Image 1 (cartoon, rainbow, N blue to C red):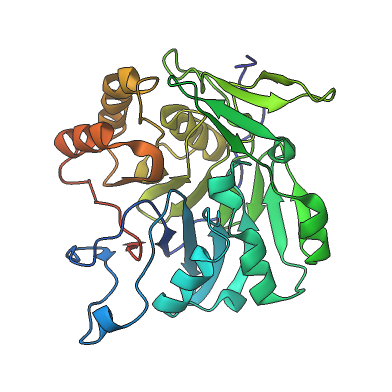
Image 2 (tube, one colour):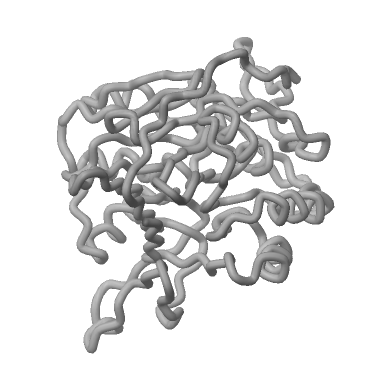
Length: 324
């Protein structure tokens, strides 16, 4: 593992007046969850149970909208698993995909890019920027303690090029939306307890399977909200969420982490042992908003809710978090 920290000055991430994060795909849908301060659930209407419902699945996608000087611009972070789940949920929520300025893939696992072609078919050839890490193209699989193997096919470059997207491969940090959104690129690994994903493999050049525990293409999104701090989205946190947050602070020079949103990958026997160390580090960082979803797992969800009760927000498809 190359855990050395990159030698680079802080990224000039422009502060914004507000950010809204809407959960478009996640593992949970609960129509009865209540809204609260800064948290808006999908509205219940007279005819809600007579219309197409919001769909949940083992996947993740989030709409990220930044506001500065009265201007609102949006990008998409991941696209879920099913080919039509994302566009279906956008339709139910009344979100127009044509407003997107860019798409960012957190990494190459199928539950994060599976809805991409369905979205692009809806949009048509718009040369929309698609930001990903070069390792995103690797064919992968996971092997579980039961012996079951799960194929995790990568996105198809040929299919994406046919859809007319502008593919931007970035290993280093990059800025979007006139410097208002940071894509971390490859995250530096420094914590002693976040040791990647065991029993994870990638296809080698000769067609054989080789160990791929570090999943180097894992990358997060970061927004700096003026007078609040950083809002960090990490779809699966294969880098380890504590590594992600330390790296976001290092890149931006901003010490305060105001919000953490996304999957923390603390589910299952391989990851549950690091829940205490992870939660302790989160308590030390003391985010004001904590929405763990997707692959976080119920044991970690409960531990985070107990440790950070005022910050914790239950995830749910259709939830909109606003920080301003």
